[in-house]
Image 1 (cartoon, rainbow, N blue to C red):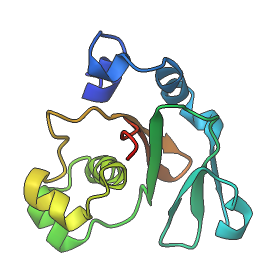
Image 2 (image 1 turned 45 degrees about the vertical axis):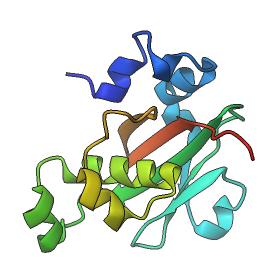
Image 3 (image 1 turned 135 degrees about the vertical axis):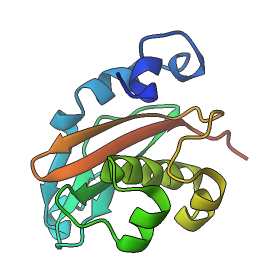
Length: 150
């Protein structure tokens, strides 16, 4: 079964009414992600820092009307016991990176997100995302419509 975000890309609805480049970018996300040292990824649109000193950067083209966030974790990393107890171990890093990416887009601290949603996506979310394996990493790239200006 495809993740809800992937399914949203193929059906009409709020997530698909905005400009079309975002679904195409999610479909080809591997082409726009780079893994390296933080100093080498300074020109990334957005980045995620890993616990082993590496960084994942997004190098996709501009997406007018959309904001982008990325989060990555080592796929073989141990799930912290307290988080495993609270959220379970099944598919943990995919759910974690998705929630972290959505937190970044919503400007909400992850602890506040946990209290409201756990690691789930709120039903009212207009974000679209893709979670993928990139070498030894689990990476989520997420987009949300830009907020209206002041």
